[in-house]
Image 1 (tube, rainbow, N blue to C red):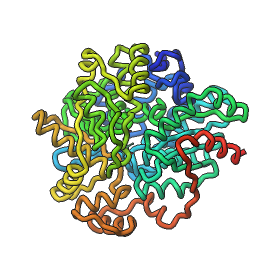
Image 2 (image 1 turned 90 degrees about the vertical axis):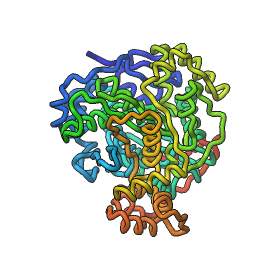
Image 3 (image 1 turned 120 degrees about the horizontal axis):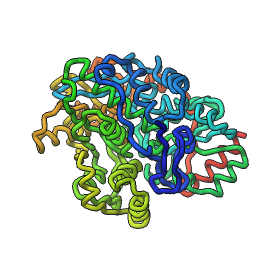
Length: 497
Ligand SMILES: *Cc1c(COP(=O)(O)O)cnc(C)c1O
């Protein structure tokens, strides 16, 4: 049965998966949602003997129904190959009473690779299927990891260009170097004078600017998004939750049907929403534990039912979660309002105008599968140190937030179901903060010195992605004000032609 997509704000419906991927954001500013969440149509016994690629096909075919088997398998095999440093693609590591689902074994050592390795293939296939004749320009706002992972995926892909905006001073040194050394003639990187929310809002404004879109269409360009608002990001992220459950079964860690909890370090709400989709498809997940850092807007939301972004934006040691406007939450709002675009529209308008909205008690009840928690920087550091000291397992500062929140969850609820913690980045990507956590000292050393010290201490070899940027030349030095983002896009595209 075909699954089609509609805007959470009601302006578009009956859109095929490939069109939704090509378009990115709906024309009315809403996000595309499938008209229903399909159920897994294969037994756990079968799933537990499948590879990552086979599992990906079983999950993705249910959502991307207008892709042929050959197209989808082609995309999957090109994405999940030797770019990943382990055949398992997303291995589970047991440490300190939880299972860490390591989503950082791809090109750029953060979980964004899981979806961004496949998105360029899904998108170029979609362009072919829909006879799109324009060059696709990917516009991306990044809190540090998406930008690099998207560029790694789209670099030198024919028929595409990519422009990445990141907050100057709002990403780690390694993240910044990774982006500024990016190769590929079709890549551009711009540091904006603002924070991540400014970057994301600026990109959304460009998407919503029909006159600008038409002007650019006249020059042969069509915009799309590699942010987690694109369903082509969301669907591939569902795969690893199904895979994790099947792996636990295969390893005899759980029995068939046994419920587990899932803990996700959250920023834009994309990763945890994918876990919710996995649950709705039939994966036995009890609670979805939403872990925030000091920017705890989601913790407040799940505890009070009030979303309020009117607060100070805090720069933390987990920069990829420094977000006050979690875009994908709109999809949960839409679902919990009984798929009502009117109710969702009303709340999104309130958010735009006042920075705040409250959900109804019924809606809050429908979100009962979620549990919100947060860990501040001190708790995060202490957790990284504790797990390393107890087990020798070293985690990054985002996974540290999730792990610390999980400890709080168990203390507060007594719920001891087995738990999978999404481990979203390699500790090498945030080496100075991780070293500070385990040594208790802030070091003034260069990141690469700390990286070598970390490798000696943890006995984990330095990943290729980090070694590569040690001496790579800087290729990108653009900067602009938030107001200048559109002009910057225009200038980059005029150079390109
Ligand atoms: C993007 C990111 C997150 C947040 O994921 P969302 O899908 O935006 O909630 C967490 N950790 C790392 C390392 C990330 O790159």
